[in-house]
Image 1 (spheres, rainbow, N blue to C red):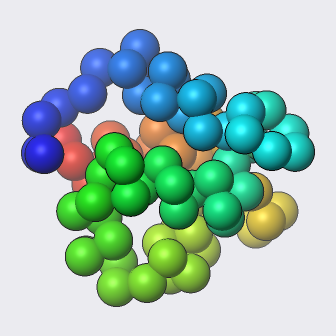
Image 2 (tube, rainbow, N blue to C red):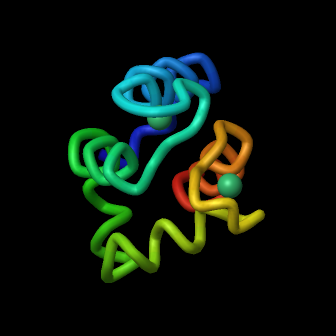
Length: 79
Ligand SMILES: [Ca+2]
Ligand SMILES: [Ca+2]
């Protein structure tokens, strides 16, 4: 669960979920939920709610999570 993921793995995971709806390069809140539930269930425990997690990830506040935002967060929390 806490296994370190390579940047390539992170990118693959991000792309898989980001492509589900809307902009394929951005994660919506719904996409983030699916991604976190499947790949990073630990994050939900520490962030308490998906809303909090999404706010933490969406640094520029545009309502979507880019790969850069995702990568910074995952690197910070899991490594
Ligand atoms: Ca998307
Ligand atoms: Ca954003």
